[in-house]
Length: 207
Image (tube, rainbow, N blue to C red; front, side, top):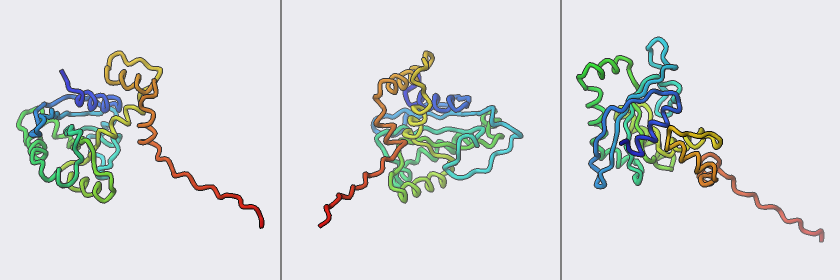
Protein backbone atom coordinates (compact mmCIF):
# COMPACT_ATOMS: atom_id res chain seq x y z
CA UNK A 1 0.00 0.00 0.00
CA UNK A 2 1.39 3.39 -0.99
CA UNK A 3 2.05 6.00 1.66
CA UNK A 4 0.26 9.33 1.84
CA UNK A 5 3.44 11.03 0.63
CA UNK A 6 3.51 8.80 -2.46
CA UNK A 7 -0.15 9.54 -3.18
CA UNK A 8 0.39 13.29 -2.92
CA UNK A 9 3.37 13.23 -5.28
CA UNK A 10 1.71 10.87 -7.76
CA UNK A 11 -1.56 12.83 -7.86
CA UNK A 12 0.31 16.10 -8.29
CA UNK A 13 2.21 14.97 -11.37
CA UNK A 14 -0.71 13.03 -12.86
CA UNK A 15 -2.99 16.05 -12.63
CA UNK A 16 -0.31 17.96 -14.59
CA UNK A 17 -0.51 15.33 -17.34
CA UNK A 18 2.54 13.21 -16.44
CA UNK A 19 2.71 9.43 -16.48
CA UNK A 20 4.16 8.32 -13.15
CA UNK A 21 6.00 5.14 -12.25
CA UNK A 22 7.54 4.35 -8.91
CA UNK A 23 11.14 3.14 -9.01
CA UNK A 24 11.72 2.11 -5.40
CA UNK A 25 10.93 2.74 -1.78
CA UNK A 26 13.26 2.74 1.18
CA UNK A 27 13.47 3.93 4.76
CA UNK A 28 15.53 7.03 5.43
CA UNK A 29 18.17 7.19 8.19
CA UNK A 30 15.94 9.61 10.13
CA UNK A 31 15.12 8.53 13.70
CA UNK A 32 11.38 8.28 12.99
CA UNK A 33 11.98 6.00 9.97
CA UNK A 34 10.45 8.22 7.31
CA UNK A 35 9.58 6.32 4.14
CA UNK A 36 11.09 7.85 1.00
CA UNK A 37 10.39 7.09 -2.64
CA UNK A 38 11.80 7.66 -6.11
CA UNK A 39 9.72 8.05 -9.27
CA UNK A 40 10.05 8.30 -13.01
CA UNK A 41 7.74 10.77 -14.71
CA UNK A 42 7.04 11.30 -18.40
CA UNK A 43 4.82 13.81 -20.18
CA UNK A 44 3.82 12.56 -23.65
CA UNK A 45 2.49 15.99 -24.63
CA UNK A 46 5.89 17.61 -24.08
CA UNK A 47 7.85 15.09 -26.15
CA UNK A 48 9.07 16.50 -29.45
CA UNK A 49 12.40 15.70 -31.07
CA UNK A 50 13.93 14.27 -27.91
CA UNK A 51 15.96 17.41 -27.26
CA UNK A 52 15.96 18.71 -23.72
CA UNK A 53 14.49 22.14 -23.19
CA UNK A 54 17.02 24.69 -22.03
CA UNK A 55 17.04 24.78 -18.24
CA UNK A 56 16.25 27.91 -16.32
CA UNK A 57 17.49 26.80 -12.91
CA UNK A 58 15.55 25.41 -9.99
CA UNK A 59 12.49 27.51 -10.75
CA UNK A 60 11.91 25.84 -14.12
CA UNK A 61 8.19 25.40 -14.94
CA UNK A 62 6.88 21.86 -15.27
CA UNK A 63 5.62 22.48 -18.80
CA UNK A 64 9.28 22.65 -19.89
CA UNK A 65 9.93 19.11 -18.63
CA UNK A 66 9.35 15.96 -20.69
CA UNK A 67 10.94 13.36 -18.42
CA UNK A 68 12.46 13.36 -14.95
CA UNK A 69 13.60 11.38 -11.96
CA UNK A 70 11.74 12.51 -8.82
CA UNK A 71 13.30 12.08 -5.38
CA UNK A 72 10.98 12.56 -2.40
CA UNK A 73 12.26 13.67 1.02
CA UNK A 74 9.10 13.81 3.19
CA UNK A 75 10.70 15.13 6.36
CA UNK A 76 7.65 17.22 7.19
CA UNK A 77 9.06 18.59 10.45
CA UNK A 78 12.33 19.71 8.82
CA UNK A 79 13.22 22.88 6.96
CA UNK A 80 15.87 22.21 4.34
CA UNK A 81 18.48 24.73 5.37
CA UNK A 82 22.03 24.49 4.03
CA UNK A 83 23.05 22.62 7.19
CA UNK A 84 20.39 19.95 6.72
CA UNK A 85 21.26 19.54 3.03
CA UNK A 86 25.02 19.32 3.66
CA UNK A 87 24.56 16.63 6.31
CA UNK A 88 22.20 14.55 4.19
CA UNK A 89 24.70 12.17 2.57
CA UNK A 90 21.89 9.86 1.48
CA UNK A 91 20.61 12.51 -0.93
CA UNK A 92 23.73 12.39 -3.11
CA UNK A 93 23.94 8.59 -2.87
CA UNK A 94 20.38 8.16 -4.12
CA UNK A 95 20.99 10.40 -7.10
CA UNK A 96 24.30 8.80 -8.07
CA UNK A 97 22.97 5.24 -7.66
CA UNK A 98 20.08 6.06 -9.98
CA UNK A 99 22.26 7.67 -12.65
CA UNK A 100 24.82 4.84 -12.47
CA UNK A 101 22.30 1.99 -12.61
CA UNK A 102 23.24 -0.72 -15.11
CA UNK A 103 19.83 -2.21 -15.86
CA UNK A 104 18.59 -1.82 -19.44
CA UNK A 105 15.46 0.07 -18.48
CA UNK A 106 17.33 2.79 -16.61
CA UNK A 107 19.93 3.10 -19.39
CA UNK A 108 17.12 3.57 -21.90
CA UNK A 109 15.52 6.20 -19.68
CA UNK A 110 18.81 8.08 -19.28
CA UNK A 111 19.05 8.49 -23.06
CA UNK A 112 16.26 11.06 -22.78
CA UNK A 113 18.48 13.19 -20.51
CA UNK A 114 15.82 13.39 -17.77
CA UNK A 115 15.66 16.23 -15.29
CA UNK A 116 16.29 15.55 -11.61
CA UNK A 117 13.55 16.85 -9.33
CA UNK A 118 13.84 16.99 -5.55
CA UNK A 119 10.72 17.27 -3.39
CA UNK A 120 11.27 18.45 0.17
CA UNK A 121 9.10 19.53 3.08
CA UNK A 122 10.08 23.19 3.33
CA UNK A 123 12.78 25.64 2.36
CA UNK A 124 13.80 28.60 4.53
CA UNK A 125 11.36 31.53 4.39
CA UNK A 126 14.01 34.24 4.31
CA UNK A 127 14.99 34.98 0.71
CA UNK A 128 18.76 34.89 1.28
CA UNK A 129 18.67 31.57 3.17
CA UNK A 130 16.24 30.12 0.62
CA UNK A 131 18.52 31.05 -2.28
CA UNK A 132 21.50 29.46 -0.53
CA UNK A 133 19.58 26.21 0.01
CA UNK A 134 18.47 26.13 -3.63
CA UNK A 135 22.01 26.81 -4.84
CA UNK A 136 23.34 23.95 -2.71
CA UNK A 137 20.64 21.58 -3.99
CA UNK A 138 21.66 22.52 -7.55
CA UNK A 139 25.32 21.83 -6.71
CA UNK A 140 24.30 18.32 -5.66
CA UNK A 141 22.99 17.69 -9.17
CA UNK A 142 19.27 18.56 -9.08
CA UNK A 143 17.56 20.72 -11.69
CA UNK A 144 14.28 21.51 -9.92
CA UNK A 145 13.18 21.65 -6.28
CA UNK A 146 9.54 21.59 -5.14
CA UNK A 147 8.09 21.71 -1.64
CA UNK A 148 5.09 19.83 -0.28
CA UNK A 149 3.65 23.25 0.48
CA UNK A 150 3.71 24.13 -3.24
CA UNK A 151 2.38 20.72 -4.26
CA UNK A 152 -0.56 20.69 -1.86
CA UNK A 153 -1.38 24.30 -2.71
CA UNK A 154 -1.48 23.43 -6.41
CA UNK A 155 -3.68 20.40 -5.77
CA UNK A 156 -6.08 22.47 -3.67
CA UNK A 157 -6.18 25.10 -6.38
CA UNK A 158 -7.02 22.56 -9.10
CA UNK A 159 -9.52 20.44 -7.17
CA UNK A 160 -13.10 21.44 -8.00
CA UNK A 161 -15.79 21.59 -5.32
CA UNK A 162 -18.55 20.25 -7.59
CA UNK A 163 -16.59 17.29 -8.98
CA UNK A 164 -16.68 13.81 -7.47
CA UNK A 165 -13.21 12.20 -7.36
CA UNK A 166 -14.30 8.60 -6.77
CA UNK A 167 -11.02 7.09 -7.97
CA UNK A 168 -8.80 9.18 -5.69
CA UNK A 169 -9.21 9.23 -1.92
CA UNK A 170 -6.70 12.08 -1.69
CA UNK A 171 -8.43 14.37 -4.20
CA UNK A 172 -11.83 13.51 -2.75
CA UNK A 173 -10.60 14.45 0.73
CA UNK A 174 -9.15 17.73 -0.52
CA UNK A 175 -12.37 18.44 -2.39
CA UNK A 176 -14.46 17.91 0.78
CA UNK A 177 -12.14 20.09 2.88
CA UNK A 178 -12.35 22.79 0.23
CA UNK A 179 -16.12 22.42 -0.15
CA UNK A 180 -16.72 22.91 3.58
CA UNK A 181 -14.37 25.87 3.78
CA UNK A 182 -11.89 24.14 6.06
CA UNK A 183 -8.86 25.15 3.98
CA UNK A 184 -9.96 28.68 3.17
CA UNK A 185 -7.58 30.44 5.60
CA UNK A 186 -4.67 28.33 4.29
CA UNK A 187 -5.43 29.20 0.68
CA UNK A 188 -5.69 32.89 1.45
CA UNK A 189 -2.37 32.76 3.25
CA UNK A 190 -0.65 30.92 0.40
CA UNK A 191 -2.07 32.74 -2.59
CA UNK A 192 -2.95 36.20 -1.33
CA UNK A 193 -0.69 38.17 0.92
CA UNK A 194 -2.92 40.63 2.62
CA UNK A 195 -1.63 44.15 2.72
CA UNK A 196 -1.63 46.02 6.01
CA UNK A 197 -4.50 48.42 6.34
CA UNK A 198 -3.58 52.04 5.96
CA UNK A 199 -4.42 54.22 8.86
CA UNK A 200 -7.18 56.63 8.05
CA UNK A 201 -6.48 60.24 8.68
CA UNK A 202 -8.85 61.75 11.15
CA UNK A 203 -10.60 64.86 10.02
CA UNK A 204 -9.79 67.55 12.56
CA UNK A 205 -12.21 70.48 12.83
CA UNK A 206 -10.88 73.78 11.62
CA UNK A 207 -9.74 75.92 14.52
